[in-house]
Image 1 (cartoon, rainbow, N blue to C red):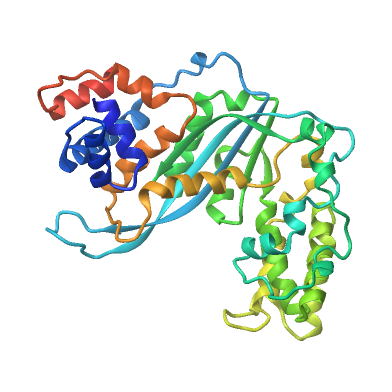
Image 2: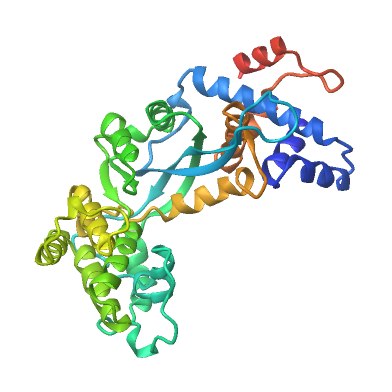
Length: 392
């Protein structure tokens, strides 16, 4: 019964909806009971996470390719213990990480030197940049320089070198980045990631991503997510070339240069363009009409050591954080929504632990609940919850 409540309550949008579904499944459980059980299990998972002993020997083999990705999210919180209603609501950042056991093959030559179809699709690139795609764009202007490479992308030869996820484990927390970095390192050690012959750390430009990399994963290859690169380049191209077709052609050239390892040339070109207009990119304020170009230069310049994409592809490493982007959405399905507020920080932390455990592929939540002692007729006391945590 507890396992049913936890999995249903951790998947649907609210405890109230969970109670309705459970009733449909002939489990007459109140919304308050769902909340209490989720809170109890969430607290226990927090305690277990912070105090469990490492046991990497339980993992039979180290992965062939270990990939760590992390990203932030945003949820609405409220001040707890203030009575009914929402008090002192505030947006707070969640920290999320996916640790992927992957497989791929190493290649002597770049297995995919042309831009993938996702990055030459005007509508999708505009979505990456969170910008509107120009209306009535001529079909012939979509790809003025490059051929359709979709057939090449799907070939068996390319798929051998493309990283493929085998097992995903997930962690999420309201903790600060220093604490979250420790949690990530602990999970990586548990999964024997440090023993993998190939290791990669993929992230966007958030400073705390690379602080965690430097402090805990410095031996992993640092890779800047290419999707974010394209979003900055697309926004910059629309400023440099206001005409729709010209800006798209410029974007394609700049994105291809970065994809093929010529990011230094792109950084130099953006800087020169700004200087020709008497603008130093470091001095461009928010709201300045040339800000997108300055932002693109700053983003690429700050991450210039993490953009050797041809080398990453030859090594069979991922070059986008698409798996992490998808994971954040899956976490947000349960913790982010209209009029959804979490007690700050304990309420949010409990649910994040349950949600992360559900989304992990190693059945960790099933194993934990199967060993969790309890009585079906008596509410668990604090002492019993502590005993269960220690036993697990």
